[in-house]
Amino acid sequence: MSAKRKGIRKEWELRKLLVAKGYLVLRSSASRTGVDILAGNGEEVIAFQVQSTPYIPEEKLKALEKYAKAFKAKAVIAVKIKGKWFFAEVGKLKKTKKGWKIPDDK
Image (cartoon, rainbow, N blue to C red; front, side, top):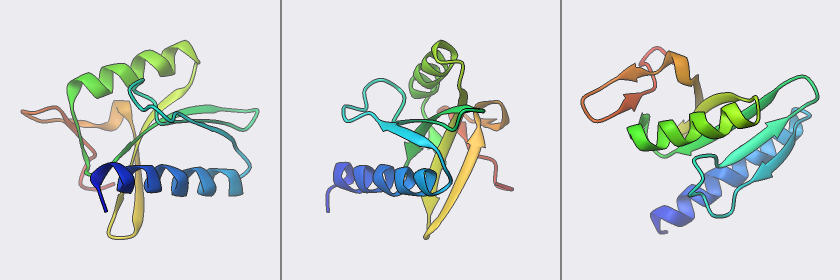
């Protein structure tokens, strides 16, 4: 399976999880916006960038923050590793030489 197909599958899986928790969900089919999923439940709005690794490049992070700000949404990185989802708000990411990373203590 291609990396693109795996990414799409993870986005749909996260969408299903959010819907089950009572969120209305929009998925960006052309993920060049910085936001893969926008979810809201009437109390909060969350902008997700779905990653295949716990690392996110600076440019993707900036794009996510831009869209989250425009929609007054919380900016969150979502990554699924070995069958388990991990989530980190942008403010809790750790700076690395190549960009940002979800903290090890997820």
